[in-house]
Length: 571
Image (tube, rainbow, N blue to C red; front, side, top):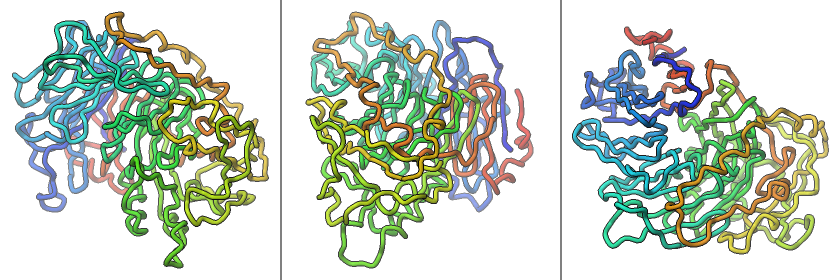
C-alpha cells in the first residue's frame, strides 16, 4: 500500500540511474498529536523536500512522511523542475545541516563531470564546479556534504577519484597540480598545489575503475567507499588512513551503508549478494542471498533496529571504531568483574534490520540477529600471520582479555533468517597473501574465521547459483584525461581474486552465515535504484521514474488523506 507517481517514463538505454534526495525542514513535534504541519505550497514552506532526477530533468516535490504527520510525500505535482541540455544529472544531495525555511542548499552532479551548487530559496545563488572539466572529465558517480559542514563536500567520479570541494572557493583556471600526501594499499591521497584557496582542496585515488558510492559513518569520522574493483575500503577521514578492507565475492560493489551504531557496514553489488562487514572486528559477518541480479541500493532501517537500545542497557554506550581501541562484538565478556550478567541477554535484544533493492526489481528485508552476531559457544578463531602457510591453532591469548578459550560451533544454530551452516573447510588461508607491507592497519584485525559445524548440507550445491556475469570487467577504462593525472605513482589494487578468495578479506560462501530475506517482493517493472527508510514509510524508486511510498504495517491510515490515496497518483 503506498503512493506512486510516474514521471514521463522514457526508453533511453543510457539514462543515469534515478536517485532521490530528501531534506527535512522544521520538526512537526510542536504540532498537536496527529496534526499535520503547516506546509503551504512553495519551496519556502516548512516540511520535507524531495528531489530526484530522470534523464535530463530534475524534479522537486513537497512532502512529509514521519511520525505524527497525516500526510505522505505529495507526488501529485512538482514544485519545481529543471531541464539540462548537453548533460544529465546523475546524483544530488541536500545539506541537512544548514537546511531552513530561508535556505535549502543542493548539490547536483552531472554525467559530463560538473558539479552544481544551488539554493532552492535564493534563486540567484548558483555555482558550477569543474565547469571546463579541468579537474575530471568523467561522470560524477556520487556526492555528499561533509557531516555538519556548511561548505565542504565530496564528489566521486567514474575515474575512481574522490575530490574535496569548498563551495566558497573558485576552481582554478588551469588543470590542478597535486602533491602526494599519503599512499597505501589501493589508494593514494593528494593535496592540491595552489597559492590561493582553490578547488579541489584534496584528491583521493581509490582502487581501480569507478568509485561507485561512499558513505560517512554516523559519527562522521570514517568514510566507507565501494569501487568497481570489488573492494570496500574504510578510511579515517581526518587522518586519511585506511582502517578496513573487504573484497566482494564477485564483481564490483555498487552500494554501501552503515548501521545506526556504526559497528557494521553493508554492501551490495554485482555478486547478487548483500555482505555484512564488521567494522569493529574487520571481518565479514554474514552474506545475504535473495536477489537474482545486481544489488543497487542498501539501507538500514533505524526505526526497527534495536542495537543502540541494547548498547545503552549494557553500559557499552561508546562505540568502538576509533584509532585507539577496536573492541569485538561481545564487549563485556572479558570484564569478568562484577557480574552475573552474561553477554547473551544483552545480545538477545540486538536486531539490525536493513533492506536491499536490485536490478531484479525485488525489494528484500533482512534481519541481522544476535545468533549470527554472537554465536554461542563463541566461534573458534584461527589467526594466520603473514608468511605462515595454512592455518594455525587458535591463539592462546585473545584480544579480549580474560575471555575463555573458544570451541567449535554446535551442531545447529537457531537462526530464524539464515541458512544451515555447512562445514567450513580448513583452508581459510591467512590474509597475508592479500596484505601489502605498507598497509597501515594490523593484519590481526583480519583474523580468519573458521567455522567448524559438523553437518555438511551440500555447500557446493548452494554455492552453484547463477551470477550476473556481464560487464564485470568494465570500468577499468573510466579514467580521467591526461591532464588529470597527478605526479607520483598511481595506486594499484594488488588483490588478486584467486588469492583473496578463502581469506578473511573474502571468505568462501560456506565460511560465513548465509542469510535468507524475511521479505523478498517484486515491486517494480524496471530495476530498482532507490531505497530509503522513514519513520512511517519506505521510499523506493525504479529506473522508469516510478517513485513509491510504502506504508509501514499498522500505518496504512497515514496515507489515506484526500489527494493522497493509497492507490497512488499518476501524473
